[in-house]
Image 1 (cartoon, rainbow, N blue to C red):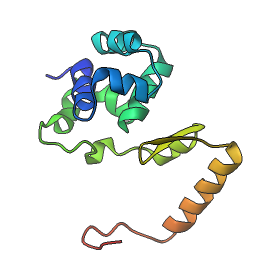
Image 2: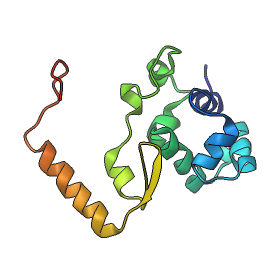
Image 3: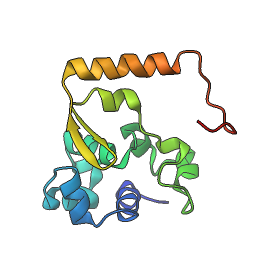
Image 4: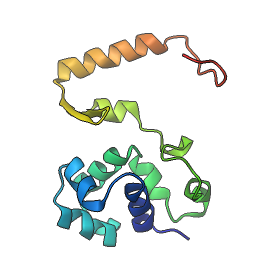
Length: 133
Protein backbone atom coordinates (compact mmCIF):
# COMPACT_ATOMS: atom_id res chain seq x y z
CA UNK A 1 0.00 0.00 0.00
CA UNK A 2 1.32 3.41 -0.96
CA UNK A 3 1.92 5.94 1.80
CA UNK A 4 1.08 9.64 1.66
CA UNK A 5 4.79 10.36 1.65
CA UNK A 6 5.44 8.11 -1.37
CA UNK A 7 2.39 9.45 -3.17
CA UNK A 8 3.48 13.08 -2.84
CA UNK A 9 7.09 12.35 -3.67
CA UNK A 10 6.10 10.45 -6.82
CA UNK A 11 3.81 13.27 -7.98
CA UNK A 12 6.53 15.84 -7.39
CA UNK A 13 9.24 13.85 -9.15
CA UNK A 14 7.06 13.44 -12.26
CA UNK A 15 7.65 17.12 -13.03
CA UNK A 16 10.35 18.58 -10.77
CA UNK A 17 13.27 17.84 -8.53
CA UNK A 18 12.42 18.19 -4.84
CA UNK A 19 14.45 21.41 -4.64
CA UNK A 20 12.74 22.89 -7.69
CA UNK A 21 9.30 22.04 -6.35
CA UNK A 22 10.13 23.56 -2.96
CA UNK A 23 11.17 26.79 -4.72
CA UNK A 24 8.03 26.68 -6.89
CA UNK A 25 5.74 26.62 -3.86
CA UNK A 26 7.93 29.03 -1.87
CA UNK A 27 8.80 26.51 0.84
CA UNK A 28 12.24 25.85 2.31
CA UNK A 29 13.68 22.61 0.93
CA UNK A 30 14.31 21.32 4.47
CA UNK A 31 10.64 21.78 5.33
CA UNK A 32 9.52 19.90 2.22
CA UNK A 33 12.05 17.14 2.88
CA UNK A 34 10.83 16.81 6.46
CA UNK A 35 7.18 16.62 5.39
CA UNK A 36 7.98 13.97 2.79
CA UNK A 37 9.38 11.86 5.62
CA UNK A 38 6.26 12.35 7.80
CA UNK A 39 3.28 14.03 6.15
CA UNK A 40 1.11 13.80 9.26
CA UNK A 41 3.77 15.75 11.19
CA UNK A 42 3.58 18.74 8.84
CA UNK A 43 1.58 21.87 9.52
CA UNK A 44 -1.76 22.21 7.76
CA UNK A 45 -0.52 25.40 6.06
CA UNK A 46 2.46 23.57 4.53
CA UNK A 47 0.40 20.52 3.53
CA UNK A 48 -2.07 22.80 1.74
CA UNK A 49 0.81 24.56 -0.02
CA UNK A 50 2.09 21.20 -1.30
CA UNK A 51 -1.38 20.06 -2.36
CA UNK A 52 -2.04 23.34 -4.15
CA UNK A 53 1.30 23.10 -5.96
CA UNK A 54 0.43 19.57 -7.11
CA UNK A 55 -3.19 20.48 -7.95
CA UNK A 56 -4.64 17.90 -5.61
CA UNK A 57 -7.08 18.41 -2.77
CA UNK A 58 -6.19 17.82 0.84
CA UNK A 59 -9.10 15.36 0.89
CA UNK A 60 -7.41 13.33 -1.85
CA UNK A 61 -4.20 13.24 0.16
CA UNK A 62 -6.09 12.23 3.30
CA UNK A 63 -7.48 9.19 1.48
CA UNK A 64 -4.06 7.86 0.46
CA UNK A 65 -3.34 4.63 2.22
CA UNK A 66 -7.02 3.83 2.66
CA UNK A 67 -8.59 1.04 0.60
CA UNK A 68 -11.14 3.19 -1.25
CA UNK A 69 -8.41 5.29 -2.87
CA UNK A 70 -6.57 2.44 -4.54
CA UNK A 71 -7.85 3.57 -7.93
CA UNK A 72 -5.93 6.86 -7.52
CA UNK A 73 -2.61 5.15 -7.10
CA UNK A 74 -2.18 3.47 -10.47
CA UNK A 75 1.30 4.07 -11.86
CA UNK A 76 -0.11 4.89 -15.29
CA UNK A 77 -2.48 7.55 -13.93
CA UNK A 78 -2.01 10.96 -15.50
CA UNK A 79 -0.71 13.71 -13.26
CA UNK A 80 -4.22 15.11 -13.10
CA UNK A 81 -6.45 12.06 -12.97
CA UNK A 82 -10.12 12.62 -12.21
CA UNK A 83 -9.58 12.23 -8.48
CA UNK A 84 -6.85 14.87 -8.54
CA UNK A 85 -8.45 17.68 -10.52
CA UNK A 86 -7.73 20.95 -8.79
CA UNK A 87 -10.64 22.46 -6.93
CA UNK A 88 -11.22 25.83 -8.58
CA UNK A 89 -13.08 27.32 -5.62
CA UNK A 90 -10.16 26.48 -3.31
CA UNK A 91 -7.70 28.01 -5.78
CA UNK A 92 -9.77 31.20 -6.05
CA UNK A 93 -9.89 31.57 -2.26
CA UNK A 94 -6.14 32.08 -2.08
CA UNK A 95 -4.46 35.31 -3.09
CA UNK A 96 -1.62 33.48 -4.85
CA UNK A 97 -2.56 31.74 -8.10
CA UNK A 98 -0.28 29.89 -10.52
CA UNK A 99 -1.30 29.96 -14.18
CA UNK A 100 0.85 28.61 -17.01
CA UNK A 101 3.83 28.42 -14.67
CA UNK A 102 3.57 32.06 -13.55
CA UNK A 103 2.60 33.16 -10.02
CA UNK A 104 -0.01 35.90 -9.66
CA UNK A 105 -1.30 37.65 -6.58
CA UNK A 106 -4.94 38.64 -6.95
CA UNK A 107 -6.96 40.98 -4.80
CA UNK A 108 -10.24 39.77 -3.28
CA UNK A 109 -12.06 41.95 -5.81
CA UNK A 110 -10.29 40.29 -8.75
CA UNK A 111 -10.89 36.80 -7.34
CA UNK A 112 -14.60 37.62 -6.95
CA UNK A 113 -14.66 38.87 -10.54
CA UNK A 114 -13.02 35.63 -11.74
CA UNK A 115 -15.56 33.60 -9.79
CA UNK A 116 -18.44 35.51 -11.41
CA UNK A 117 -16.93 35.03 -14.89
CA UNK A 118 -16.44 31.30 -14.34
CA UNK A 119 -20.00 30.89 -13.02
CA UNK A 120 -21.34 32.70 -16.08
CA UNK A 121 -19.27 30.54 -18.42
CA UNK A 122 -20.45 27.37 -16.75
CA UNK A 123 -24.10 28.38 -16.44
CA UNK A 124 -26.11 25.73 -18.27
CA UNK A 125 -22.99 24.09 -19.73
CA UNK A 126 -22.22 20.42 -19.38
CA UNK A 127 -18.89 18.85 -20.04
CA UNK A 128 -19.07 16.91 -23.29
CA UNK A 129 -16.32 14.33 -23.45
CA UNK A 130 -16.26 14.11 -27.25
CA UNK A 131 -16.72 17.80 -27.96
CA UNK A 132 -13.73 20.06 -28.48
CA UNK A 133 -13.80 23.59 -27.13
